[in-house]
Image 1 (tube, protein in one colour):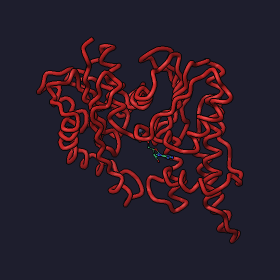
Image 2 (cartoon, rainbow, N blue to C red; image 1 turned 30 degrees about the vertical axis):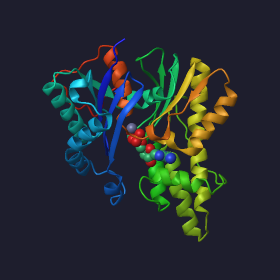
Image 3 (cartoon, helix red, strand yellow; image 1 turned 60 degrees about the vertical axis):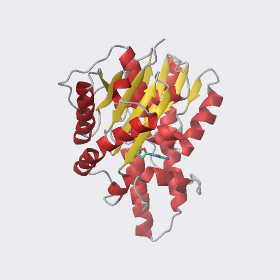
Image 4 (cartoon, rainbow, N blue to C red; image 1 turned 90 degrees about the vertical axis):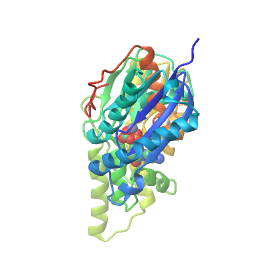
Length: 335
Ligand code: KG4
Ligand code: ZN
């Protein structure tokens, strides 16, 4: 069978990324130009700054990916791009670049949903088996997604307020840690114990999520200690936050597993890089549900990258999905 080569572009937030994927599985190039150092100074992503940096970087990143794979755009079967969701100005840069390549080299344009990309990152290390359940945990999303079959998505539960990554970043900020906070909360929590009681997330729909109450509970805990002149152990607070947040995730995941009986459950999104969450899934859930196969993406593919868009893009391409030249960025795109 003929090989399929897809060039993929991802620019939904603060990473300008381009990858080249062979047959939806093999990474021939994976280049990520991150803006973390710029946004660190502001304690978060400034959308206007992010899109300007994407404009500066995109051509260079495309060139670098082609060089890494030792290929030309002519060799590609299609150009995949994240159409949404994300920051509109950031998305526009990737979409515009993809349209330009597709038009100039007469290649099919393949729009990809960012979350489909995060889920399909798991295809780099395992064959996906359906029905599949995906626990999507990122800076912008917290979702339980049910896939009855390849390229079919049903959202079972979603966050009613903050995404888990967003909450982790805010907790990091109030603990005085650098941006992105979640990464440093993970490191700090390793030195602590989950000894503090924090508010457990509650939702009406048992598969939905909520993290703003937990985030406020951390803020109130710190304020209370300050008011009373009491000290607390930051590492213990980091560990307590993670324990409460991840147990809330696992509670919903367990309910979904018991209701939907998936063959596989995959973890997806930036927070899937968290060491405590990875351990909970690979040990606790694996022990509890021996009939379900749990897949955790490689660390390099948890946070935003274009390899995941290339993998999802290949599946979309084979399913006949095509974008016209009037394709625009869709910041609120639905899965
Ligand atoms: O998937 P991603 O790169 O961007 C979105 O699609 O939102 O996720 C970024 C999020 C950030 O909130 C970041 O703090 C979080 O992933 N993150 C982590 C870790 N690594 C990245 N959160 C907790 N522990 C980590 N090790
Ligand atoms: Zn993402």
